[in-house]
Image (cartoon, rainbow, N blue to C red):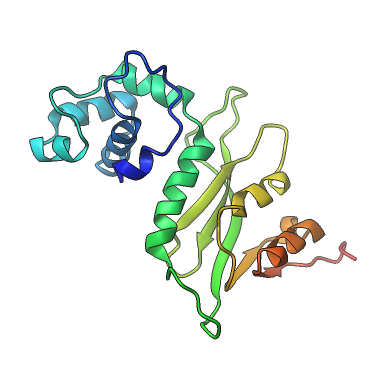
Length: 199
């Protein structure tokens, strides 16, 4: 996983980098899965981890401190991180080759507020996610910009996903001609809710 996360653009200056970005992000992932709920807890997790785990994460002699992790996470491009993780999950969660005649796969597009998060305006972070029906695996997500809604994030959310053999499902908010055209152009299918106010 650290190798996949190395593809995320690194916002740090080249001079003075001690740790690879993939190693730092993989540490954050493992620490959160292990119960860490803060940057401080993540740094403590790194310090207390086994030599084997540190070797897997490519930490040779030292582990990152709270300041190093905090600065990186504050400047990181969230969409680039979502793309890297989504692509990795997508490879392992779906059949890599879809042959004609295979059953269609479902992909749900839906928005969600991230509990416990806050933007600089004080509101919760809102994400639009693409989730596989069968495994409930999120393979792509985009943060909704403040003072916007989910509609502009629909096309960027799906642009890196192969939609051949996929049925995109979404709620009435996404019953838009442009969304349907985007899915068809990518050789996918759609199932969208049509309310009475739609012609």
